[in-house]
Image 1: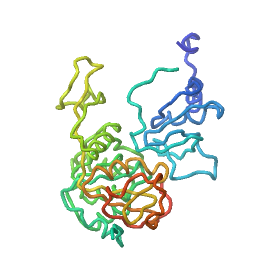
Image 2: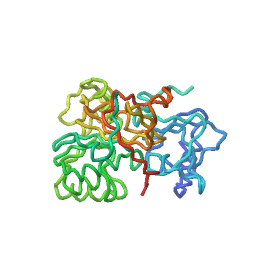
Image 3: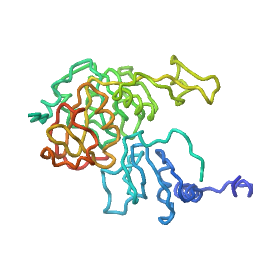
Length: 107
Length: 228
């Protein structure tokens, strides 16, 4: 039950604001898959000091936000084929090989 | 002396024949062996079954192979992307077969083929159209599992970052994707590599695909992927 439901009205949000709202709900230490489309924007809205591990179905673990202008790397894309960055602890797996089969209990 | 290096993409794809199942690595345009695919177009083979995560965009690479009528069937997880016009036109006209496989199931069917596992059960697709005609185990909706079969290739077309003459391979960033698993899943694995290095130069800890899975390597240093 979110703040919107309590207020009785649904606020209109643009794509970035929706991604920021979702990012605000992701706690430190979580492992989160970002699927193609709007979810890939979520990585842009998690504060750098909050350690969240974003994975992408094409085999990237520990994605960071979109690159700054001039720092794009066409070898480094997310599920939506957009260029991304990496955070410390990064890994590359085979596509599909990074998926965890069963949800793990939150610590 | 073991030397799997060949002089041209044309020579590299010589083992590919009409009617074969061809595994093609890549995710979007990253790690995609486009020069080998173009060589297949030049070779003129037909009636291929292509296994690839995506089904080609624009008019080059896999899109060109399909546009030239050389592909009978595509097995993929994500056929429609921006620019996947060739597949959409062929599909609408009934000129190509399409089998959609959930992405994790695609990766696992390929892995199973490489590991010698004939089939496996997965809950993915249980209770959906994609499970029709397949064996289901487990009675409850939550516990139902679908029997999926290994997906071996006659050949695999792979893009690597570095290779030596034994065919030991490294990959570059998200260019890895389906390449290592496909390299293990085919009877004949053909690689285009950005760098050819002397045998012994690759740090053994960095080698992702051992050369035992590789048959032919051609040096194609084309630079960076074109994402659009």
